[in-house]
Image (cartoon, rainbow, N blue to C red; front, side):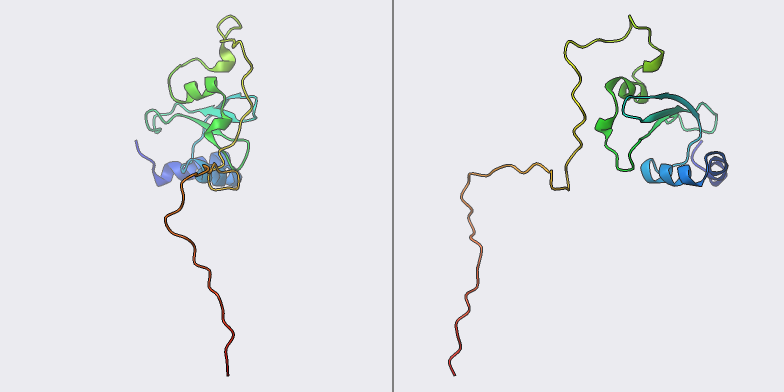
Length: 140
């Protein structure tokens, strides 16, 4: 079933106005479900299994930061959100967890549109030179 006004109002009453605004800003829809886990970055993961939810849209994340980036999700939780696995990372036994030989690097936020954006250095001579006006003194 698609998103309806009745469903949106019902979810607004369940989650409250603050979470309603947060969800509309981040996922563009209102959802209500049970908290299934929190990752090391503080993101909260939810799941909702109700008949009025759209198929494959029953799992979502509520980011800790207001300005979020997908790279702020741990890889195991990313697989769970994308329906690659059904077992949540916090339910895995210690012998089932993947252990890396190297530590996972810290999150580097995407810098597109900011001062931290990647700008390649160009060694090509520009075809057009910038015009700089020169002002001559007027003679009377």
